Length: 431
Figure 1 (tube, one colour):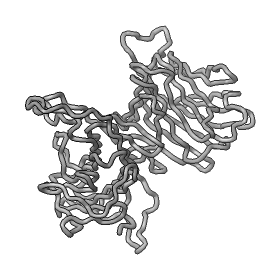
Figure 2 (figure 1 turned 30 degrees about the vertical axis):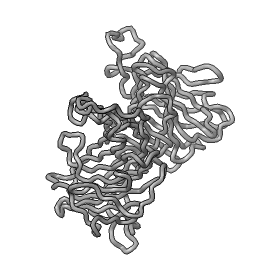
Figure 3 (figure 1 turned 180 degrees about the horizontal axis):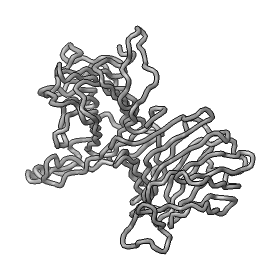
Figure 4 (figure 1 turned 120 degrees about the vertical axis):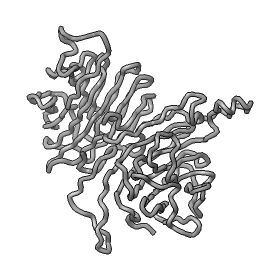
């Protein structure tokens, strides 16, 4: 799934076992999670890992999302490949970019699924088109129109770039290569990234990316897929359990972060149960006065199921313990500061340890913190939580005549660089 361990929930397949400076073998990551894409902020919503895809939904705003290549393509040996689906009947662009943000290769998927390339102010047909229902032409005489349809999953490959002759080769689904002359803009010296966007917003404007890969002169450079589902939890109806929880939206930002936007919400990702493990991640928040916590739990069907909770809580960098919350000493708080958090747990010993920015934190004088409750099988959910618990008035509060809360914009928190290990061990370089 990953050559350069990037992308959502990529399962690591290291060829060389890392070693500590003292000669001891370091545990290999089970999962790494980076958010390599960046949304342009035009109102689209994004969900990572739903059904194994990065879903880019342009129902209420245009999709416009980009990522950089791990290494620029500057020869005919480089290539880039994407497997994706789109909702047919709309127009989408798959653009290869160059500095500074030019679009020297513009691949258009038109409303009928026909694939064209920009060539000197017009779009040249490639002779390839998308299908639906396992190979049916959307623009053919036998197309069915009784409902909106999504395309089959198609694999786009762009290769053999001719920077002097201004052409490239396009391959769809492993079919015969198609030469696209004049479809690489003159003057282009290298390609630096890829951009996916929809021409307009509205119901059904949606791209779902299944995987992404790059090759260079010497072979594979990067591969990204999305096997972990980072699921925003919808707000319960008023009167249902936890009805102070609000809706949450997620999107990639800055080719580094998963932005979580909510007044008081949760995002959950399932992993295989681990009785022992360590999770590292980075956290940044626009307002340290509100909650922003990493929660590790054994899922029991409820929204708020805390076994380990670490992060900004009750006015400081804190951890949940049995009977309350304990603040760590000397962790400076600042808006938009990046915190590196590491949590290691042992379900057999019923304890866990926490490091903030590499420093081991203590509770009641000890680095070994008792678990709030026993693990039956192991930690199987990574939960991101943020917001102000007073942001939404509950049914009970209304019945008691409490005044409504002051209206506040959603809190934006940023999460990234997740690494999961199956070892109860300190992070490398921990103090």
